[in-house]
Image (cartoon, rainbow, N blue to C red):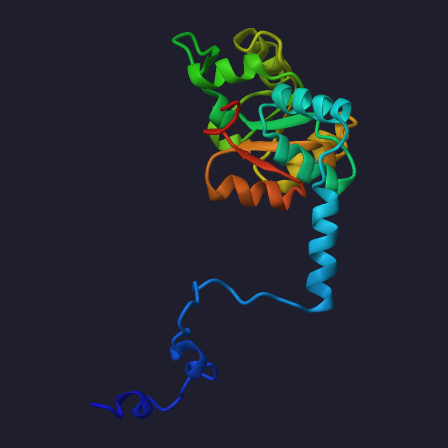
Length: 212
């Protein structure tokens, strides 16, 4: 039985390290990196997260509250992109159920929990009209769809883009003169996280934690 491991043939290159027990007093934490690169990174990170002056901090807190994100999310995005977030993209499938009424008319039923969150939002709001989430619309219905949506969301939606991928989001933002670095995606699950990354957005906010 003792030689079972050796009979496996290909022994992992790091097996001795993996099997080595830590000494007395070891807390099983990671090794402390004393390299020059690690020191530079720790120094830069500490400088970046240094508390700004009170007025700047208050402005960031207020902006984060208006957008429904955390102070840390806002600040991290600012450090990554150099610009402040100010817009959100929300998939229509999360915001409302779209169907045809008894006379064939388009009906938008806002999801109550999302409608309440949209009511709190203090930035520029755009909807991504994922095509699979709506009935087939003719040109006239598509032209009038924004007004229909805004009756359900108290005029908070600035524009709607049609599609289901990253380029559709970029096209929507570009058409409304919004740099993609200034927008974040409100989504649910890994699929929307990948969608936000594909669009090059700096943040994807889970709808369960939006304004929480």
